[in-house]
Image (tube, rainbow, N blue to C red; front, side):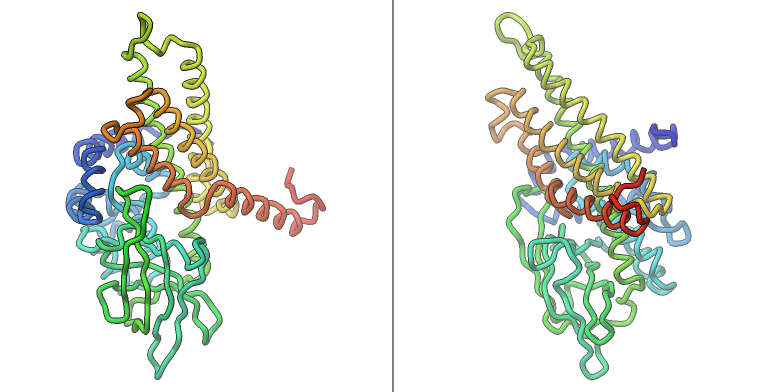
Length: 382
């Protein structure tokens, strides 16, 4: 495959990056620390007008039906500008409804997501501080399906008009996906403490929530696994964008900051740090590109390489943003510097959907299981 993006993809990236720099950036990021999820509501209309919210939906419903590979650079631009909006959740939710929903669901939900009138989000986490499928049970009572339980780590929950979550159906012993309206009876939401105040997280609790017509999405366990894989790759790409911008700002700074009669960028220690960070950035770029391509091609290898890309991008983002603070010297540790905003976003992205160590354990299980199925006796494919 070709490991560089096409001219059309680069043109879209430049256009989106310009928009995000104009509408977002550190200033809006700081505002989100004060006002929370309300900032996302103010951005929805602009993003919808530019067609960005329609990436995961088919053209029939107002979208552009972009693959994950096509959208990768958009997520990268979101990371570079610290976009305070659940862009990944919007793409994943729209893609799932478009792929697994029935016609009525597509007509209703996709049009609303594309237009920005409804901000979707995903309830990624369970009650055990992990990212499994457990946490909420669906129980049939008097012919009515009701939900009980709790899900955590829901981005921009207070601004969301619909929450897509997995639930365990006790009567059929299966996982189902539900489009939950957080404003209905039987639902309570709460804010969670997050190091990254520009990306507010919440928890949703359900106590007898009544599932209405059109809220059940087909696909079940397979659909949620696909959402998880897409999420890993998209988060990896956003983390790359965060690291890239921090790296660029650090280089610009060491070129003009003078010490001992010249710019600090001339010192060998600074050069070595920058060279190491550049190597990590380029390696992450290749890993992300390949994982995006596999997901777009619906390859069975997608979960393995998605986990690999996310694990490496997480390490890269934490390392590069940390180095950027160091390269800024004393000013890098102050609130007035923007470096801590990138550092905090990098650490949040690194923990979402699993830390690097957890993902590498999952990679090992995938490789070993695949090897056992193929019968090579070692767990590796050569």
